[in-house]
Length: 199
Length: 199
Ligand SMILES: [Mn+2]
Ligand SMILES: [Mn+2]
Ligand SMILES: [Mn+2]
Ligand SMILES: [Mn+2]
Image (spheres, each protein chain N blue to C red):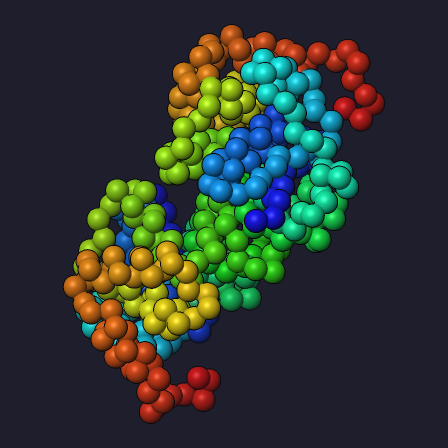
């Protein structure tokens, strides 16, 4: 079985980084040889979440990470311009996303799971349930972080009841207080000290 | 709640017609006001299946069917040129399909469920299970017909183990012998008497 990369979008946010890590974990449990990657620097908010739950950041999708890779899975995006630069060199075997579909095309049938919810992690929770695979505590923490980030602590208009329900379920597994943790995480992300010009 | 049309592709085959009928049934059970439609004449194979299981053909997607409709669900296709001619006048809220994705774009997030299996009906069976909704005997018969048609009685290279497993489960609900029924259905479709030049 060949290596499969799982990647979020460029300028990765907490959902893109967390969902790549979490979905790669699920795919490995299902027998794939899956590796999470990222398409840019980890931002401060995401760094806070990774540090809090003691999870390593995915590797950058550089030439080394892409060596011998033929297949990729996209999470938290589908548009070509948001994806790996040389996406046409890979077969996209799956997409898990919560955005509109645009500038996306495949040569072959694939597994595409999009739902009109506020966060990819909300869909991933469903996929864990459907596969009857348990979510480790640290990964539940990352999924919670993704929902709190995308929904701005449930205040975003894109946040659905399902996102809130999922977040509370994940907070329970992760063993954190949603409000307190969410505030700290967003605060860490809003800290502008040391930001690069790009940000 | 406004009317939602559920449509398969142009030159409808048994999967497109059956999946429109079956998924409209499921959406109605979920509280939608959904109506199956078709984008062309019912072919002989499909007519045999509808007649066998005593189910009415969907209405043609004409101006009357489209009146007051703002939302559509696509089954068994996604490409714009295979869909309703004035597809840009509608909001596509869902797609259930087993083909590659191409020439497809939405303005808003949607529910998109594609799986690399041999037939849309195989995915629909999963959706019924996930919703804990029972499949009526006649609709199980149509779903079986769709799988037997798309898979050419399990002989097509696109046929997966999941299609076969699903077909046997559906045959059990429908109370028919898969082989015998499938042969009769394919034979009815192969009958060239009275075919139009287009076919
Ligand atoms: Mn994102
Ligand atoms: Mn997201
Ligand atoms: Mn078809
Ligand atoms: Mn089909």
